[in-house]
Length: 130
Image 1 (cartoon, rainbow, N blue to C red):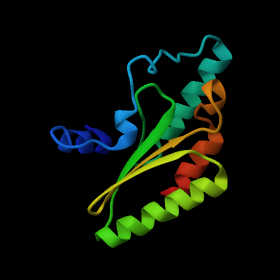
Image 2: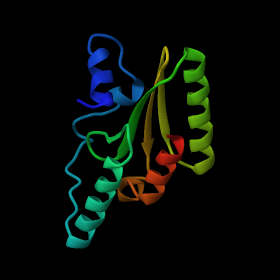
Image 3: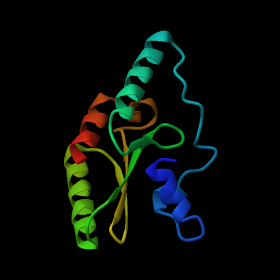
Image 4: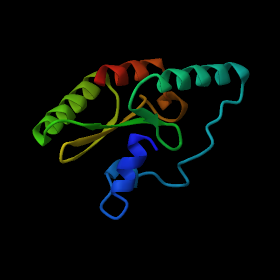
């Protein structure tokens, strides 16, 4: 069980973060690449994602998520503000949820549909956020 799954299990009986509530079955579609070239790109991106500690692909494959536990809740608030400001400057949509000293980030690519898919630039940005 990864950190995100453990976090969601913790909030199973309580209020969920807004980005979790926005996931609907009709929006989660099979996004498997249809051509061998796209399949190679997807495999390369997934391999790269596995090398990034703490980050995972959310259901539907259109966003990256990470749960971070910081030393104190003020540190969590400051990190959340840093992530929002950085994402805004870089032009990436981000959902942030802070609970005590835990911060949940969900990053999406720029644009809609295939243009908003995960790519190397998004992975680079996620790596910068730590």
